[in-house]
Image (cartoon, rainbow, N blue to C red; front, side):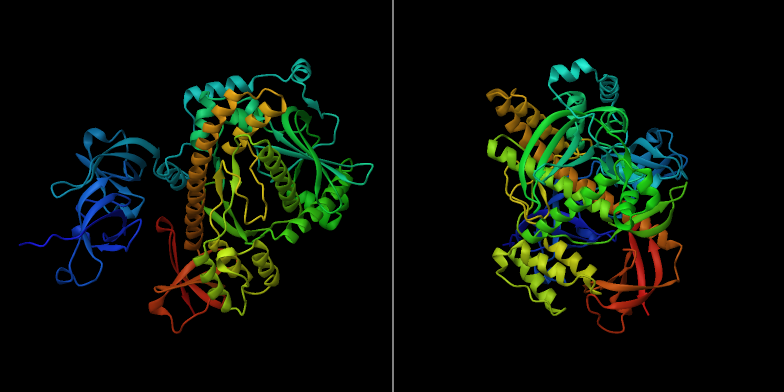
Length: 626
């Protein structure tokens, strides 16, 4: 009697060489040889049989017997045109095989073009992968074709549907009149010194700030945020598209925006010298950084200036005489803001807020979108100042609405898993660092103290990165569960409604509340709306972060193509069975393979490397330690 083999279900994770692994939600992973895939593709959900030892030379091996659910419906790649047929070579090499295209389905694509192909037939024993071209993404040689292809591979669009564009254009033409301001009861702040501080290339200016000293010596900090909800009608075409996108995606010199430009760069952007509708969180803050009183109001402002981070930093750090003279009307305000930001930061640190001072890279592209430099981005005084003010506003708004018990979208960050903390404890011992406390009840202050202790140490960056990987991912929730990393009991995202949907939806709830228009019917509707927004926004944020990382890795690999054979100093940033990762001073990371290592290396160890190879399509850079 034939013995029935054990069956499992899981998700295929396929390697570009054809083999793969079945990942189960619970239980062990199983290896699948190329000839036992049964047409399964990367990401598919499959049913498989576990092979007994006498049928294989390795343990935990299986063969796919049925594909239960297909993950891939479209493929982005490079078209190869022949006379009567063509192929799309997938950018994602995990797909493992080219897509056959019949002549009738070329859609005017030429050899070398980046295209999107819809799968019409999946591979099996009788046929190969087939499809039809539905979109020519970029012509051969077109600047930025690689990034455009990645955008489409992630299911994103730089452009908007015509109905969304039409609504955005119509709403952007609305004029702000004195009658509108009076009838709506908006707080008129146009006579106040209010200004924006952003990066030099920013076009969607959604936050402005102001400061005063009160008679009692306390600070009066105003954080004024673009009233995007005035222009984006609830449940309209614009609103539904914004929810679907969830967030704007920033890709070096490109933006995949959440809202069309007539709003994001126009009507909603707090451009100087223009009347703009805003929501203001105005906080009275004492000398110890505690918010002792606050108000949240619909308002109208007229920004006095559009400042950039470096100019403000030069005024605060160097007392630059030319810039101080240029901004003479607001220089004193900037210095007051600098003092308040220092107080807020100190208070936050005392509570145990984690500040992973991890270097980020600035990648500069030429006119053909090829990388010409990769340098460290400096977090200067002005960047930190705006960060502190936005944190204060976000925390204040979250606490206010928590106690009202209204439906809301909170930004939450759970405690790390105890297993991850135990791994971190072991890792830190390599540097003589003792992590105190219980793994299942770790406090942010414990980790914050370690971050402070390793400041300026040679291994600071590596340890910070490992600690960051120990953390859970922050996400959105309708439950106020606190933010572990910030050591905040209450937290939300209120300050960027042009580029984040959670901010936009809570603006609606805030306005209904502060104007007295909230009803039981609206509360019931917002309960469902906030749950849906939290779920979708968490997913779209993860997708955006992944795409941003992929573009950065691809451009870094392109940059290193021009430095093959050159030598650099680096630090060992990761150790695996197949080699060690080495990170250079400008954050570029590559791998030195185990087969070429003369000895074991430790995390944080300084090394000298030679660049051996760079493969942008695979996001890989090969180093050799010398």
